Length: 74
Image (cartoon, one colour):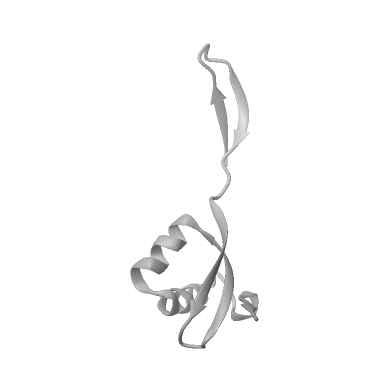
């Protein structure tokens, strides 16, 4: 998404609004392994709300990610 930076004197310059993404490691208890996800801040809140297993199953069902894209650590 694009928009404007507006200074105190109301001069406008173009800027972009980037997605708030993190590289985060989670311990996946059901599979007994560590996984690494590139996740947004809202996705992190969703995992805290419903749990990692339910959030992953919901994301795969909606087509947001695939099981092949989830990085297994060690």
